[in-house]
Length: 370
Image 1 (cartoon, one colour):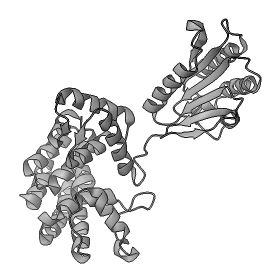
Image 2: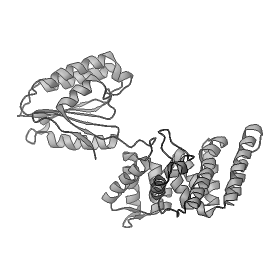
Image 3: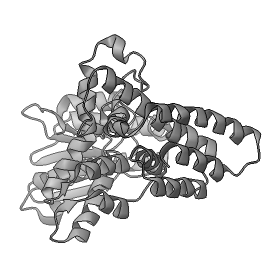
Image 4: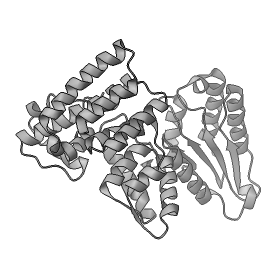
């Protein structure tokens, strides 16, 4: 749901902003359709395209918006829509003197009586809320804020899961648990990508409404991070053939073997060890979904989780541990410890010898799950 700032009763100024581009565009178009006078035809809506790259272009667009606000409507009312503005972000364009001067003029124009039936709508994806223009604009406007999910913050996976399920329900799609986890991580909480990939699944499935992990793998493109995650998944699931295929795919894409080792293989083994140890010591059952393990971790005493890997914000990397916890019971602890030793040996060989890199990674995979 968007965050909405309720406008004062006499306001005729509206804004739709935020980092979620798809939602900003959707909500902006819906609001424009609602605000434009129904009986004014083409004269009731004046659109100024604010998507520009240069400061002079931005200043010209802002001046066009001011002129539109100051020009009386032909048939009783109109909506002036400054659309997709790219000059409000904290960047070189947004900080330029020409843009700031023009925005001061727009602030003055919006402070005046816009006249009967005249309204103003601003839509923008990147907005620096510290700027004087936005602060003045926010005082008199009804603003809807659509911020996208930040995948660098802890807990983003749960937010993204809710978002995927919400959009899937609109199409009548139901994900299997494993398929949902994979789809969330491949789309990364990006609304536009979620909608695009759900549309592909919807068309492909036809009357069938359940989505399997195989269908997600076949239809949703794998980014670099997606392949890294899938390799870890294949290792945890003891799927030897798929793990070897993904190693080859990453190497073919130009990834360095040492990077694959540190980004996927080593973290997977470490998480399996940590999850298995916690489950053994605290008599925890394998979770049905990763979030169940996160909830279980939150109930443990602080000293029990002090050694767990953390994200930049200090939160436990619970989702990755939750995935490991689903599969840790399939691994012998001694084999995992041998896998850690194999990673150390591989690290040495990758940086100090001329051995074939795929061969080195293949040996680790086979030692772990072969």
